[in-house]
Amino acid sequence: MSRLAQTADLTDIQREILSTVRDFVDREILPVATELEHRDEYPTRIVEGLKELGLFGLMIPEEYGGLGESLLTYALCVEEIARGWMSVSGIINTHFIVAYLLKQHGTQEQRDTFLPRMAAGEVRGAFSMSEPALGSDVSAITSKGVKDGDEYVLDGQKMWLTNGGTSTLVAVLCRSDEGHPQGTARHRSMTTFLVEKEPGFGEVRPGLTIPGKIDKMGYKGVDTTELIMDGLRIPANRVLGGTTGRGFYQMMDGVEVGRVNVAARGCGVAQRAFELGVSYAQQRETFGKPIAQHQAIQFKLAEMATKVEAAHAMMVNAARKKDSGERNDLEAGMAKYLASEYCKEVVEDAFRIHGGYGFSKEYEIERLYREAPMLLIGEGTAEIQKMIIGRRLLEEYRFQG
Image (cartoon, rainbow, N blue to C red; front, side):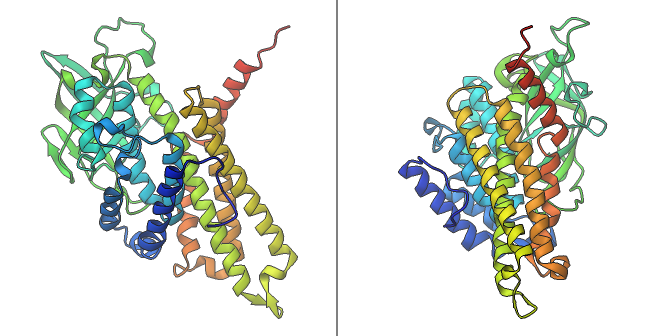
C-alpha cells in the first residue's frame, strides 16, 4: 500500500473490502486493461469478477441482498477500480446510481422488484438525462411521457447513455405535463421512468432502440450509446416513486452522489499516473543518472503527489458529509471539480516524465492521457461545478448589510 491517499478511521470491514478490491485490481484489471482498451472490448470477465465480489450490491441494503455499505466505502472502492481502469468504474457507477434512486425514491414494490436482482448483478442499471441538443441545461429536455390509460407513452432521443447496450433497467428522465398546469416551472414537470429492456443493440423492445456504441477518444470498453423512444409504452407503476413531477429532484440527488463517484475516479486515475511517473523516473537515465535525481523531475513528482493527496482528502470529506445525512452539494461540487482538474494535470505531468515514450501505445500512460478528459465533463462540467459552488457560497455567506 502506498503512502499517499490513505483514509483515517475506517472500520475493519471497510479495510477488508478495500484490500480485497485492491488485490482484484492488481491481479485481474491492470494486466489486461490497456489491451482491452485498445480493442474497445467490453471487460466481461472483469465484470463477472466484480459480481462475485458483491460490488454491484455494495450500497444496496442488506434486506435486499446487498452489503449495505456507506457512500465512503463505495467511493474508496471506485478509487481503487479507476486506478486499474476507469471504464470499469463507469460500469459500476451507472448501476449504482439507479440502485440509489430506487433505494431513496422508489416505491416499496419497485424496491422489492429490482434491488435484490441488482445486488446480485442480474439486473444492470443505467440512467439517462442528456439529449443531443441539451448540453448542461437539463431543464430543457424535450423527451415526453404522455399518460394513456394505465400506461405512459414515451417519445424522444437521449444521448451519452453509459451501459446503454449492456443494461437491462434504465432510469429515463422525461417531461410529463400531467397534473402540472401551463406555466409550471420546467423542472417541476419532469418524471423519471423505469424502463426495462433486453441487453444488446437495435430495437431492444417495441418502441425502444439502442443504435450502437458511440466511438470515443477514451473511456473505451464501456458502451456509451444513444437511446431512441418512439411510442415506448411503460406501465404507470414504473414511474419512479409512483408520482409524476419529481424526476428533476430525484435525478439531481443521484447526480450529487455521482459527483462523489467522479471525484473518486479522478483520484484513482491520478494515483495510477503518479505511480507510473515515479516508477519510470527511477528507471530512465539521462546525463549519467536516473531522471528522478534531476531537480526538475523531483519538482514534478512533488506537485503530483500533493495534488493526489489533496483530491483524495476532498473526495473523502464529500462522501462522509453525505453519509452523515447532511447536504453535500457544495463539498461534492468542490471535490469533483478539484479531483478532475488535478487528475488531468497529474496525468499530463506523468506523460511529460515519460518523454517520447508517453506518446507510444506501448506505455500505459498513453491510455490515461486519453481517459482523463472525460472526468472534466462527466456528471457536469467544471463550469457547472463552479456555478454550483458559487451559488452555495453566496447562500452560506449572504451579505447582511
